[in-house]
Amino acid sequence: MELIRGLHNLRDRHRGCVATIGNFDGVHLGHRKVLAQVKAKAAALGLPSVVIIFEPQPREFFGGDSVPPRLTRFDEKVRLLAAEGVDRVVCLSFNARLRQMSAEAFINELLLKGLAVEHFVVGDDFRFGCDRRGDYHMLCEAGERHGFTVEGTHTFTLQGERVSSTRVRTALMRNDFELAEQLLGWRYAVTGRVMHGQKLGRQLGVPTANVRMHRYPCPLRGVFAAWAHFDGQCLPAVCNVGLRPTVHGRLPVLEAHLLDYTGAELYGSLMRVEFLHFIRPEQAFDGLDALKTQIEADIEHVRAWFAQAGRD
Image (cartoon, rainbow, N blue to C red; front, top):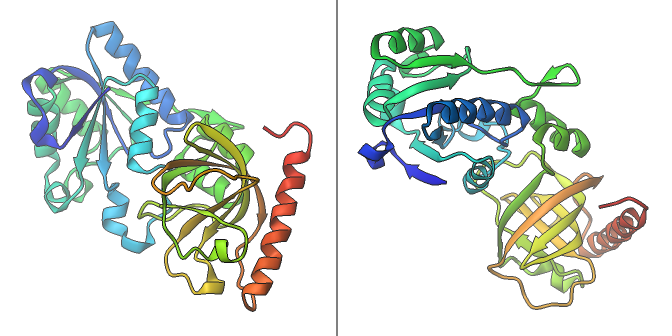
């Protein structure tokens, strides 16, 4: 799969395609239904399939600190799109210039001049351009004038409700990992590099791998049982996601204590943490002794959970 960063990197060889556009946060089952539409049409026309995404996502550009938690960081999203068999991903920087671009200019610069789209798959509620003036009907009219066709996306439902990133986010915030996995089609995880921290866990006798979080909020908060994947290994882990109020933390961090790990230090390793079961909410303790006692209780809780039959 080819990743193209920005309109300025589009070349003549990128012209002619079947495309869709959106945030694709989580690349959930609803997104995969759209991708299947795009790939089927692309195969029928003998053209490459293209997904257009934004970084940051438009709501993040406008919303600042009030944006909803992101399900997938950029590189994880691209990996998931590649796994779906998409030929190209075009990532547009959502900045002041793009925010001010008129709907007509968006169609001319991206769909016509940049990609020469022959077929465009998009939801009928999609809005684009300055002040969100562009809509599905404008795209259809532009297609009639310029020779490309427009197709609406198919709604995908599960248990009678539409599958959406918002629904996945809500399930995760309720610690309903089973529903989240059903909606996503994959077990929810956070991936990042292991970085140096305060080494407080080591002082307490429970060393942790501190996984670098992306700059956007995580939908989870608390202590969890998880699988930690790293350097070709997979180990059960006790994970804390939060601000660490006992030690006056300011930024969210993911700390993973790997059960019975005796290997080398993991600094710089890429770790994927799959969340399985909620243990307790994050809380402040009266000193490090109380914190250590609770961490030891959490470890025993997680060991007991993994010991139950059928945990995988």
